[in-house]
Image (cartoon, rainbow, N blue to C red):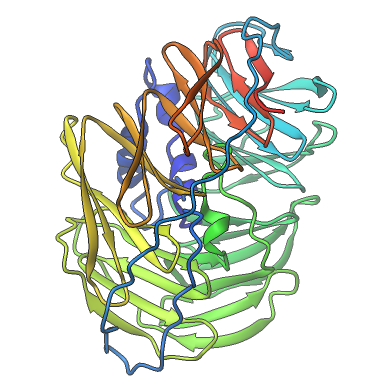
Length: 477
């Protein structure tokens, strides 16, 4: 995948490599360094805005005016309720851990964690009963991890360095597919984390080996390829047909599974194929020249609201996938110095973070159709990530803040926040977990949780890895 959420998964290994864990800025840096590729791994603001449609434009003809986003409607208050942070974990760890993460989908939460002895574990919780779905499974020892991705069909553990592990061949990067209902291992697949693009659907994983020139649609239940393409795909050129709302980081740091059952392959020769995920049939073929970045800079490509966007150096390229307009490219006004661009505001605007010093950074919002800089915001302190959500942009830092889609500051936050489905936030801070009402700025104390990784939430329940195990807490009515 080439989305912001994928950048998060791209470097979760850094959480194991260092104690204490690094912040999201370090994750982003490691992703760019490790992969020599144009996707990274985190994370993508529900604002009521009309999706901009490309007009009929000639090749290389830019749009005339940038989009100005609209200040969103502030969400209604959430009925926060305090919880018992001292409650026993639903899943207890067998020993000390170095890192854990959870992903919540509906009434189930899934978790993976790395023990100090190198063993990687996976588990699941039924949030309706507050009990494990199945006994936690030990997958054996690994030298590193890139976390997990979850869909209805499988939990995919992205493991590394499994020397001596009977599940792994030759210590290679390996995907281990676990049945979300039973916890049983369904299949394993050696791959290259550094040299593949991945798009996960409910029942299929589309996996592109960039160097080998092979793309496969893998059935999540069997691990077998449903269809195969043996043509070179550009790096970062395998993407789902996502809407902007599917890129919002709601309830955690994981992207939503795309509802559209099509995948876009941008071939190295410039052909753009829109294929059916089930059959692999080409539904439409278009043309867009592949932009090449300057040396040592990343190439970014993604699809949002029916438009293919690509960035390389200080240029952007666009293609309407309905065939209503030809591909064109423009130069960007802002000097982004190879910064990663990710979709962040409805209407086709992208965010980039530059000038990070640990004490300050600049958040730049650009319109890739015209190349214009829409607005910039100076961030004081360490910037850890920018996460689009229902009401704007969550700027994670020290402290964190929320900006509206037009750059208007909405609130400040002390801790690591999570967007909620309601449009309000949970904040995991040094004093515990608080619920933040965006409309009033009120902070509601909820409980103390000793977090040991990344939490996730649905509309009422929070699931966190703690020093003792996987804890589940009701935070709202």
